Image (cartoon, rainbow, N blue to C red):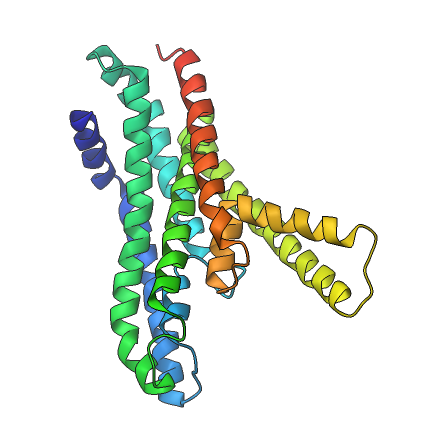
Length: 273
């Protein structure tokens, strides 16, 4: 397994998609830092550090920029493994399909987490001083709350990477996998935007005493869907609004287990001649 991981990381470092994704991550980090410093210079900011760090999972609570960066990177890397017969060569040298699949999944997950952690380290260190000057405090929430948000979002990122791995395994080719990955992210964001809109309207109707038909059941359904989708978890964390934080890691683990199980089944049945 260690030899497979080493070879996979080497191929990833040689991939132009990786360096483009890294550049895009740095550009997104720079944008967040510039906005922070601009608010500081104009005296218009009042947010604290948790808003900066959680922006690594969603912008303005609706746009999953990091997910849009990660999806084509993983799809191109995994598609190249199939189209360039790298996987077949690994099997010829004696590696099992299970070990090959799990090694690739591990690289995808670690790459996704590394990009997120890079954002948090850079954005947090560069924005700490202006945030302190603007707000007088670094955090408005306990440190344990911030760590819980970040841990939940990182686990959701691992679930997201496992879904991309499954999709790339099913599609094989770089182009089709990249397009499908981007469409998946866009569809998830549309679903989440609709879901958050429904939650807001249903909660408002219930609060003012005008319950709609099956209002509470519909509200529970939309909350459940937002908690299951990795994208829904990112956006809730980026909004700093996570009413069901405790159950999100459970759903992420289920998504990882199910997608990995299906992916292994599909991969074992593939003819890689």
